[in-house]
Image: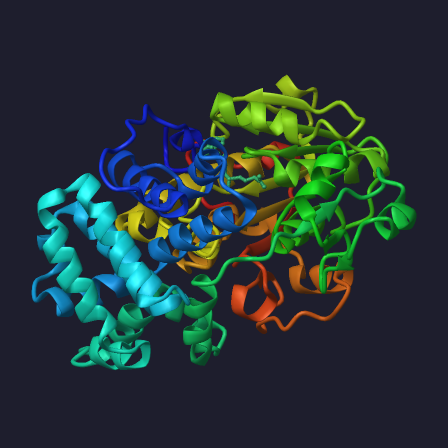
Length: 492
Ligand SMILES: C[S@@+](CC[C@H](N)C(=O)[O-])C[C@H]1O[C@@H](n2cnc3c(N)ncnc32)[C@H](O)[C@@H]1O
């Protein structure tokens, strides 16, 4: 399973540890940290299952979530604190003991848990997983507790060789990610927003809802939802007092979805008026969040949607995601790089294609707490190659006049402007960039504060409260006979 896949959240066989009793929330949090470290589990998939299995109360579930997510996000910072407190680098500490120390440090520096409870519970916890380290954990956590949170920040920042390193330490990001985010903001002349962006990555996103357009009962249905508040930007989005209950009761018509993802899907479906009978394709569709929006939009406009996904289990998720939309969507498993439009009944090509490309996900770090520590700079080169191939395949599958939306949930300029710019150079006069900014502004409820380049839209967690989605709309202007072939020679 690749990094985009979803099966790492599956619970593995669990041996209940022996030793003193530790609060169930801390046990669940430790268990998830261990699975993330040892089995490369995804915390956002595993944690809910572990909470259910431990039958945690609502309060304990919230505490376990705070402990797990907070510790994973801030682990880079806590490792700096622990290196000072323990007098040795974090890498020199036994990994299970380090997890216990990170959890304890989070409680001491970022929660209102009383010091004695944080220290004693973590010492009890380590007695169950590495009994010989109990004295060490006790001593290190007591050292951490003797200095307050602000003073620790000053100590950690001390001696940072440059500003990016300082921010990387304090805001708990790998320094290469800080540099990439700085470069992306600098391209907009907004490098001064970097710290705010890094801080936004460290806070939990709100649970946001998408009300699939045209298939609910409209205003009446929304009016009946407790505490429903429309999103600031997405015309189909909002929040509710108890969003999960709302989703469970809505039979697929209301789904959890980031506001930026909604804007990305709507940018394609509302780029130009829909003609009945149009053929649409979602090329890399798993797990299907945007497919659901496109399916509802296609239904409303009389278009026919198809979806493709390379991972079979994720294609199943797409089928589940669109279950609430009363329309037929041909969901197929295949590599988007070798696409045959005729197989989807669109021999003349598609009128609209969404390429929501596999990417580093650097725009969704707040959502996947451990992701920043797993990504590597070399992932960017591998992914930009794949993105370029998928872009060529999508562009070749467009009907003349058809529109392609290239979307990433990464603001890394290599994956956004770099990949797109190289593709535009290959396509030459066959491609025309649309005024993506004007299209997104037009469909938004309120004006978005966007950078000046009108051909693309970059959303930001700190500025818009969305994931950092990149959206670029491109129209194919050449006759179908001129489609770019396998040699990818630039068309002139
Ligand atoms: C960013 S995700 C798409 C998210 C989706 N649009 C949504 O809103 O739920 C990218 C997807 O592309 C899939 N993928 C990766 N390589 C692919 C390929 N060569 N062909 C088709 N799909 C691919 C991944 O498995 C992943 O499900």
